[in-house]
Figure 1 (cartoon, rainbow, N blue to C red):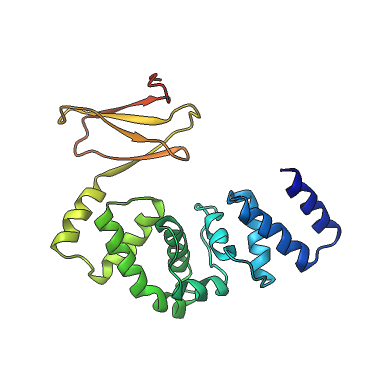
Figure 2 (cartoon, helix red, strand yellow):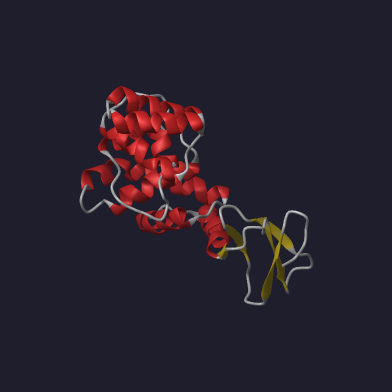
Length: 212
């Protein structure tokens, strides 16, 4: 956007906190949470700029494939404020798990919260790369009961499909044991589906239902 480019150039010319706050505020207001904007939010937190939504924007724009310690301000803030989507909370918790050797006190403060989160997500049937890490970590603490064990069984049979075809909008799963195929959306180049045997095939379709 033109306004963003102008603000960026102004900051490069005079890197002051006021201008950094203006850039971050503009990006947050515009819903710009792509990975390419993460550096701005990280700089804003490092400078301790106070802008509504800055911490949430930091988590939303993180590259989920990169795991490391999150700033202490983030750790402290979300210990008492859980107004995050489950995807954002999963990003936070995975990074806390990854840093447990370096910051064991942070891990212990969040452990009960992560256990509760894992149980909630199992009950909801959610799965993602981050949740897989969290489930693996939290199950060792004996969080399973009969109901959760049933939920976990469904998660264990979940497969991840990675798709590089930009036109593909959904994957249709044909499993021999099922009378009807099931379709799952492809979001961000990935789709998750459950199958209970090795006898299945996957067909990709575009938004008009044309198969590849």
